[in-house]
Amino acid sequence: MKKKLILIALIFVMALTVLSACDIDANGSIKSITKPYITEYECIEGYLGGENLLDSYEFIKITLVDDKEMQVSFKPKNGDKRSFKGFYEVNPETREINAEIGLFGVKFREKITINKGMFVITKNILTKTLLLKFKAV
Image (cartoon, rainbow, N blue to C red; front, side):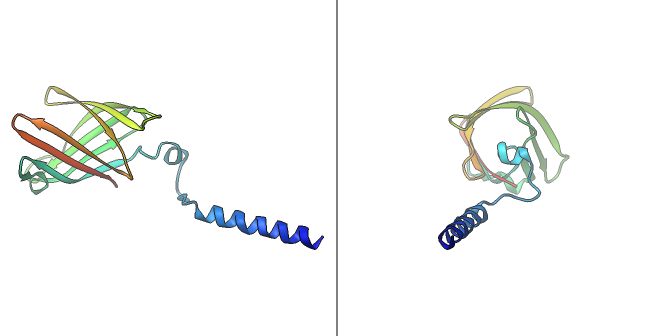
């Protein structure tokens, strides 16, 4: 009987140890657990050629609204906030996101992989390279 109680206590302690290692937010939702990538991402680095874009913008954000819709929003320091809607889909096997958005009448497509809440977009625009690094807020 004493061995059974020790075994049960040991199992209980191990279970508590494993559960305490899990970091689930008490305010979390099923969405945040099953599709944690659905959130807002803020640009933390942005360059066009050698020019730092963040010197000219208050913010540049990409928000994954739900499991299909996204929104790109930005605000120049001397202008009004603008936003554009787009769509995306996730490949659950590769965790790649394929996104498409129309900006100023031009459709852009990009394939990214979110790693540790961050992703990078690079595009060649004429002779300059656009580099945008985003982090989940």
